[in-house]
Length: 280
Length: 171
Image (cartoon, rainbow over all chains, first blue to last red; front, side, top):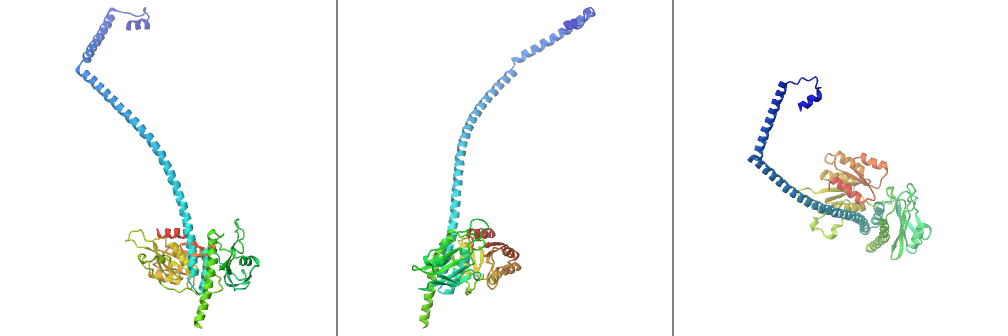
């Protein structure tokens, strides 16, 4: 509104409004009105045209397609959500199975370790038994006893004693280790070894549990029994440095020694007597 | 060893075990009272691959029998010898993948045998596990200084020996 603007901005007294300027202004306004009317006509003509109708149809089609697509996507979303829920259930079931397999693995590993220990223990017993009974030569049997104690039990300080029938004294027939540590003879009923010989019971020393504590001087005392009678004795002193204590398997080995070594030594005596009779 | 009563040493005799198919059940218990060979369980490796061979050396028939029994669970051929001299002689003629050897033996001890094996061109890189009752630090050091690859103390622990043997054999 130029007139109003002029009236506001310029005080009426100072403005020289001429008829020529008003006419010019009027003409300019008329041109603007005409341009607007032409634009209006053009727009009205375009609104009903084929191009605009097809564009509108296309837009409607596009909207429909998008709506369909949206429906599909919603269906897929719900399907995927259901799958996800199932997968979560399967995942927790699988986790339970993995935990179960893990527990089974631990159990089998433990069994494997135990079976390995049993195998080792049986191997030792088998070797000891085979070695004790594979010769009729006294020296070989004594050597076998030495090897069993050194290699399978783990001591290099021991002695083997034998007792003549009716005698109350056990005589040392073989030993390994420093002299003077183990006695040359043992009286039945006297001392630790003598008591073992009297009762026929195997003695196994309790091993120190504290680190650095001194090991017992006698680790084990094994009476050799045959036919209910004590025929000899194996006295085991200190164990090897790397063997801190006797194991449960060693006690079984002592039982094998107690019976098999006694019979093996007895057989060597019989064999020698048979040989002597044969020669005579 | 400070044995006062000497016992005669075992005779050195070579014995070759029959093929596994021909062996009877009784033969599955290794007779290691003298030098010989014992074949362990069948190899699962392809036939084209050479069967691994272990040389077990010990003057004690009991230790030899036990170690042979333990190592028989590996898919290997086991050859035994009763002293260091025999071991060195065997290793110079035949090919082995591992030697399991006692330290204290008559004729030639394990340390001397280790040195000889390390000096020979065909056995200088052969893995040697020393098996001994001696566990003092200076004994262990002596073992390594003379060329052993590993060290196992007696009484032999089955799992330890098998684990070490497997690691050197790649089995």
